[in-house]
Image (tube, rainbow, N blue to C red; front, side):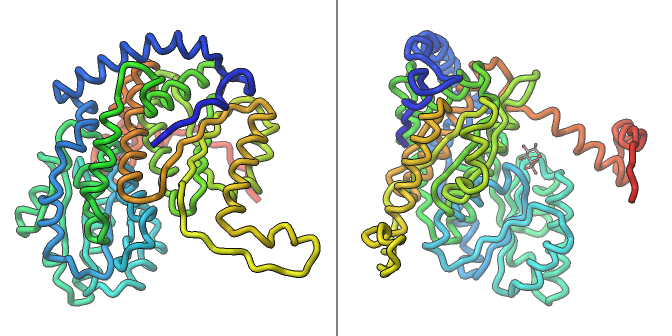
Length: 433
Ligand SMILES: O=P(O)(O)OC[C@H]1O[C@H](O)[C@H](O)[C@@H](O)[C@@H]1O
């Protein structure tokens, strides 16, 4: 992945950066890099995620998937970090696959039922993924899926893979039913686990080259260096952090490929859960080029000066010519293709933001394939770890999420009532029709 931070500089942007301020920040980047390398070398919690390109064993993934290799669909039952990495990969590469990847993360009953009703369950495999093995949504959806298989007369134990952490209730279940199981590696938080078995099971079953994903990530790992001017991932992380310090508290992620829409969702969890603590952090906003040019661009160019826009250029794509027409007003489209139109819109939008003094950064892929995608995921994780060091927060915890998790359990009678009572006692100000 390459990164162009030119449009984040003060000459064109406000709240922009100057080259001098980036050079001063680079001293902090050097210190942060040493800390990151030390954490990786000592396999410390969180930092260990940046070792995944060397640690992940593609053969273990392949043998777990083997019994269901002919499945027409794979239901991944998981949420947050246990679903979004895998979904980013299979959505980005969906065109190359005959196997449908379905993700049951939400517990919206109508949606879950509609998915189970439309799939042919005897041709479907299940991967239940939870690092903790205790997430209510995942366990509830798994129980529902299991029951649907039983009702359809399909032996779910023949079609289920379990991906979980070491001391998890799901591990006991996989042992009891002798299910193929994979580990969420120790020291790897869910949102940093895309390049472990968590992200790779669906990719493998859908026929993607998981080695190439890891190779792309390993190549990015090689670029980690003590200066933001030598390392694209750090250039991004440091620029995003520095712009936030100047008021760009929102980071709008704007990939210019339909296939990368889920990547923006994955990035949102990574950035929000990792950096949003101690009253600090930068709010990720999900967007899609060119669609959001026609819905959000007005705000990005002329609204509050509180945003960084991150463009993702997908590089080479299959193209499709635009047919010629004798309608005079449309003649300019005559020599164009959908691809060249998309590219022109991308450049025009970047320039329009820059001209209005709105900072933006461009992440460049050569194309959307396994290698480039592995590099992009790794680079964003490294960028996030660097940003966490610069903010001085604990990047790898998410204590604020736990409160609501416990309260939900409490409301359902599963203990931890202190939080549940707080929910029940909330102040109400209802306006009724
Ligand atoms: O993998 P699990 O333990 O089921 O966790 C799934 C998700 O749960 C919570 O919402 C955490 O905040 C996320 O970071 C995590 O990815």
